[in-house]
Structures are given as structure tokens and as C-alpha cells.
Image 1 (cartoon, rainbow, N blue to C red):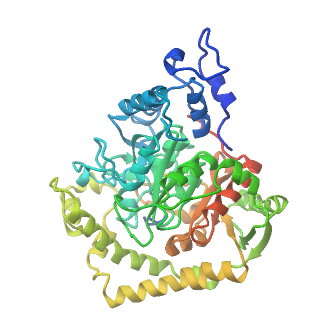
Image 2 (cartoon, rainbow, N blue to C red; image 1 turned 90 degrees about the vertical axis):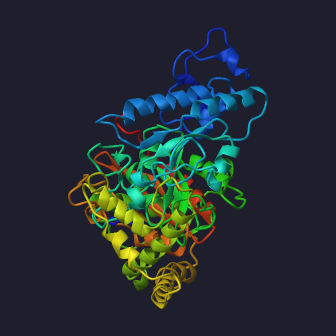
Image 3 (cartoon, helix red, strand yellow; image 1 turned 30 degrees about the vertical axis):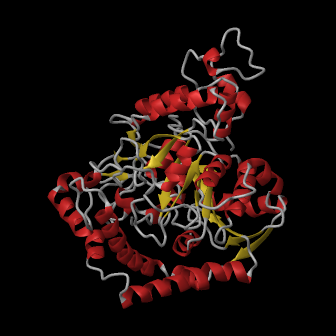
Length: 527
């Protein structure tokens, strides 16, 4: 939900250098993994999916060893009083799944670039593993599912290992106006990967921190408005919110089906492109690293939003970005945001309150009965009865407001939805893209991260605000993306890119150009 409310990885050579050598082994050609058994834990820090896959293909790494290495890092960095609390639950079946995929590799079957690669999935996305899907709330802690969400099924079919479920801002940060990003009743407080005292942003907090700390190869988050981009930006990641509808929303605890979408979060553009291609419901061509590099931004028209970011370091850096893209072959135009982009915020909140009630009531009613409430009124009652656990810092006024709303057929909702679309899309983004014949819009993302404050909750204005084009993209269903741009006193800040619907390829083209030129990604101090 909204923030206030609610470098390419190392290459094969580097990966091989970080792995223990095997006496007498001939590394010039692949050999069965059993003949190259490793004698110690491999170094997985900052390794890209491609480098991990290449090491596995050369017999330098098994999926079992990779999975165990990530689980060891989770135990060391994520648990305990000073842990980051990014991973809410690990999958008891993960090691067995890795062994099975290793056997497939030995038999000559490699499913693709994700074969044997361990990922973390946000805990509002259903999996058939022996883990609950809780949305961060203890009310769903006993619920189990008999099938994967379609996006998880796609990942698993491609050979991915579901390592665990990540913590999140409870109910996707849609319960209270004073919520603290990254807190949930089930998982507690997730901490920023770069400064334990800082806010990780939300609601895909755990996915961002897990990927940033190399607790997994990459992660899947979800977004209604800002929940992929904001935590990715503040934790030094590439995050991509796809066009709504490109990735199936079935099997995801809903907030607003009109705006909700899952998307990839990783340490480099290449990893995000790899994940996106697999979870997409339609074929995506031209997004291999070679194809993206060859295309670059040559011929693209990029609109740079006028305005000065609140933080002077970010403002100074952002003045260099147009020249970077122009040098790479793009045409860059300074553009002024239409007035409409500053007028839809209250309408979005109104629309979401109608949509959440309808969506969550339908979702809960269709769940198998594990004793959990069957509607929003039941969730409210549960929270009141378990206030010490579920509401120690903030309440549920958004829930209460939503529960008082009429249905989606009401005249009030239909008017709000129509006006919201006009402001964010027709008079907002569509007007910008069409009038200037733009392919992309560019602005600084939010950041640097503010301190965690359980008393007052998130105060995003103090950390640089949030670009209106990103909220407009969320409302209108357009794709958006963030890429690491700089660090302010050791805290990451990313750029924000927005494209017309189903133009993810242009986001990836520009993101790869920017990433290659700036190389802003740095491993967190404790990684």
C-alpha cells in the first residue's frame, strides 16, 4: 500500500574463485556434481542468478549446497534480537526439493535459468509447501493451501526452490494510518538491510531485505501502490512492478484487484528480467541480457520530471541522469507533471476502502475453514480480542472505515473509480506519454530511509516523499521500476522509471543502461 499509510552480479569467474577448489578436479569441462563435492559452504553473497547457474553447470555448486548456504545465512543474520527478521518462515521441504533438482541435473534435465535457484516469496502469496500464508496476521497462521498461486507454480516448474516466506507490513500495510512499515503480528519488525535502526519501507519489506542481504538469490514481492518500488529503493535493489494483469493475481491475499500485482525484486536488472519472464502470463521477448544490452536506450524518448528532490545529495545526483541517458542514445525531455497527478491521492484511498472490503470478504469466504474469520468484520473482531499481539503499536481504523463501505455496485464507488482513472491515467500519465511522445518517465525514488518509529509510524515526507508518477502508475496499472542510483550516508536511493502498459522491455532497457553506467549497488555492511 502507500508508504505513509499503509551492478550486475559477479561473473562466473568471481563465483568460481569464491568456491572451494576440489583437489584433482578438472574445471575445464562440466562433470557430475557428485564427482566435485564441495567441502565447505560456498560464498553466495552478491551472486547473480546467472553466476550461480553457471557455477552449477560447471559442477562447482549444487542446489543442495546453495540452499543450505542461504539457510545458514538466515540463521546467522535474520534470527534473534539483533536479526533483521526478513524471512518469516523457512520451507521444511526446501532441502529435499534441492536434492531432487540436483538429481534432475545429473540426469541431464535442466529446466532453465532458475533450475535449483532458491527464492523467497512474500507471505501474502499462497504456496503448497508446509507453510502458512498469513499476510503477516496471526489470524491466518493455521491456514494451509493445497496448491501454489499460479506465479509460484510457474517458478517451481522453471526449477526454482521456494526457500521461505518473507515478512511484510501486515495486510500489505492496509490496517492503520499510523502503521510502521515492515511490522507484522507474525514476523515482528523487519529492519533495513543497510542500517538496523532504519525503516525498510513496505509492504514487501522482508522480500527486499532478504534479497539485499543475500539470504536468497532473489525475491518476489507485491504492490498495490509503492510496495515493490519503495522497499527496493531503500534497500539497494532493482524492483519491478509489472503492468497489472501481466502476472496472475490468483492465490494472493488481495487489497485491490484493480491495482494489485506481484513482481520481482533482485540485486541486478538481469535477475529481475529473468524472474519477470517466468512469472509473466504472456510471452516476453527481447529481455535477455544480450538483447537488452544490444538495444540499450537508443531511440527512446525519456521524460524527466521537473522539480527538486528534498535531499540535496539526491538532487545533485539527479541532475546528472539526463546526460547519462543522452550519451547512451536516448532523447531526454524535461516535462512538467499535469495538475491531475497531484489530485488523485484522496480518491485512491476512497476507492481502496471499497475494494478491500469486497476483495478480502471474497478471499476469506473461499478459504478452506481452519477456524479463521470469514469476512472483514471477523478480522476486526479478532484484532480487538487479540489486541496485545496484533495491535501493540497501531490500530485498525482503515479496516473499520472499509467495513462501513457499500458494495462495488454502489453509485459512490463507481463515481470515485471513474474520476480516479481520469486523474491518474487520461489526464495524468496518458496525457504525459501521448503529448510528448514519450517511452519512459524518470524521477528520483523515495529515500533515504527514516528511523523506525513504532509510536508515530511512517513519516515518508521526511525521507524524500514519493514520486507522483509512481502512484499514478499504480492506480492506472502501468509498469514501474527502480534501480539503485546512489547512497546517502550509506543509505541507498533508487531512480524511478514508469512506462506505458505492457512496455516492461523499455524499463529493463533503461534500467540496464543506468545500472551499467552508475554501478550504485553496494552490499549491506552486515552482509
